[in-house]
Image 1 (cartoon, helix red, strand yellow):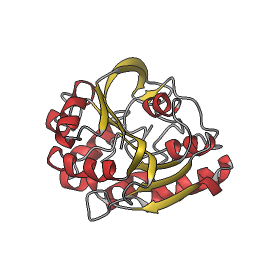
Image 2 (cartoon, one colour):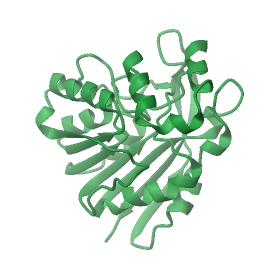
Image 3 (tube, rainbow, N blue to C red):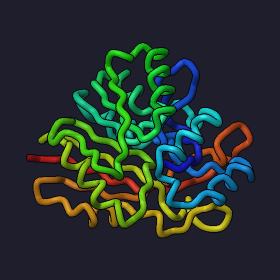
Length: 259
């Protein structure tokens, strides 16, 4: 599940003409975060069976309502990719394509995957408008199912604000780690319960994991260099012109595969 969240004020534009973004996760998400911009949007979450929050139908319906994301690349991705040599990248939960399109603009060959065909069509159009259509492949995939990316195929694997039930996280994250090539980087950015659960939201803290909890569940071996942090950033909440600038916390797992 990529829940709608505060809009990062420090993310560079990827040049997308319509200003809309990814990823389900995501102003994503990815750009994924809770959409608390109006009572009716909160009610849409509250009135839906939580088991449906992770489905193709749920996200197709939300994307049909309106564009969800800002069009910006996620701050944590930009921070990480700035130090990397462009190669092959996989953006899981790409939504409307903001992260994937930004990476393509930096010289990466990108595969963007998402559960929602509606989001992927919007991403495809955005990629064409940004002039990077030849650098991005879009694919429909459900990370909770039997889908698994090719082993060792990518120099960067990223998933931004793609929230799944805690019981499923470790298995999903292992799929992502298995797709990282030697020398490559895994980047998982998630919402932290400190900023995204509790009163005024449809979500409880047990949906969220800290970065260290994600790292512990993934249990990478000594062939990886792992960093687990829970940084804050300034963001507009709720997203949009009437939002308020505030600090929100992310859970960020970065891991480099040494061999």
